[in-house]
Image 1 (cartoon, rainbow, N blue to C red):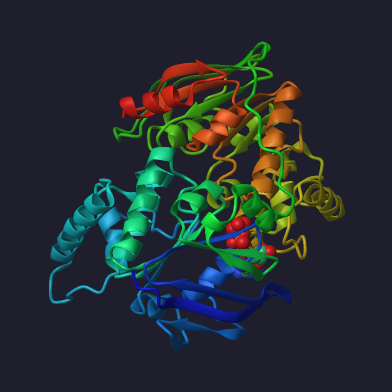
Image 2 (cartoon, rainbow, N blue to C red):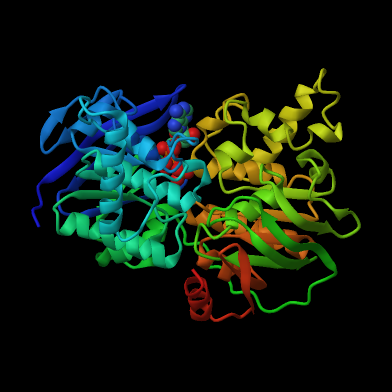
Length: 506
Ligand SMILES: Nc1ncnc2c1ncn2[C@@H]1O[C@H](COP(=O)(O)OP(=O)(O)OP(=O)(O)O)[C@@H](O)[C@H]1O
């Protein structure tokens, strides 16, 4: 293992609309190491890495690659320097196929026909994917892949473009234990055996402890520590990152739930893809959290879409007690019935990214008439409600309520969605991967909201590929595989048995 500097950022500062996202932040990662970058939501991790990947130009400070000063003109320039970044929010062209997406970022022999180049790319995809330990159909359409599969396409995209400095922004947030372990082992080998540098932006302390050779911690736009994870305990690392260590979540005891609120019967989706629904049956009671665990890509997204009224043609029944089958009801009507939805993809499915923070908050109440008729909205009331919710839900990084929602950091965007969805005391909450990309403190805050909704009598359906999250929150756990619920477990449940059920049926 060589230990010369692969990438070095020195005293880098960057402001957005007068807000200093980075204040003289410094960072060094060496060849041959996995380097974790930790920090609470909004600490500046993505901004710093976006500078390393040529997406933002620093106002002051310098960037060195292999000890040479460079000035990146953009992401393509970064790519030619061997830097590849996989973002938290994917940058794939959805209706395109996997190989087409990857071909877009490659310099290929233009003398060859497009068809031939596509075929060659498909071969490379298969070979690299196999080396990384997974398989992917190069001709699958990206919009038909699960979030976890889309992430793999992103990783393949930068590796095939020749990345030797690989920046992964929250790579395991969408993966199951087994998938995460596989991915992290692969990137560790990429660093240790092939001498590459891997930067892992993460909130998962256990991943840092197990896989990182070095960790840098950021707070408030500055880098505050760089150390070997083995030299500290998890508790010390949490404290360095978010201040005083929050209380760990408790495993729920079995509870007496109320009447059945939601009944899903024989739900099928029309697609023939491997992720289609193939007869989902489940019943959810008031006052309980029902967790759906499973390996990503087994129909979880399709189930979430069907229940949240996102585009997903399905047959079967979704019965809400007192209302009958709500399968064909519009999102607005479902909202009026007290259903709150928190989708996994917060930027494209939960928020209107180009709209302001207050407009996004108001969307939740627009149909209730609270803000007046849509041609004469009561802006003062919208802003007052939004300001109160932003305070109550601790949405940070809000310089103005008129700021675009797209400019919030990942964790804070999620807090805004949750603030809007919980504003009306829902009776049914459908939530998919709610703590994806959230720091320890924000994760606990979101979990607390879900628990208190349950304690106030709401029925909560939690779909999550993060088994820790399901184990920490759910009163009952269903395991989803190949488009069905293939087993149910009461709490306290045996984690290993659930893990076995998840993989046995794949
Ligand atoms: N393009 C932008 N325009 C305006 N503000 C921005 C922009 N990008 C980031 N910010 C702000 O800079 C701050 C740091 O954000 P950044 O995304 O770097 O944090 P982070 O540590 O990666 O957070 P998270 O863990 O939530 O992803 C936040 O307050 C964010 O709102």
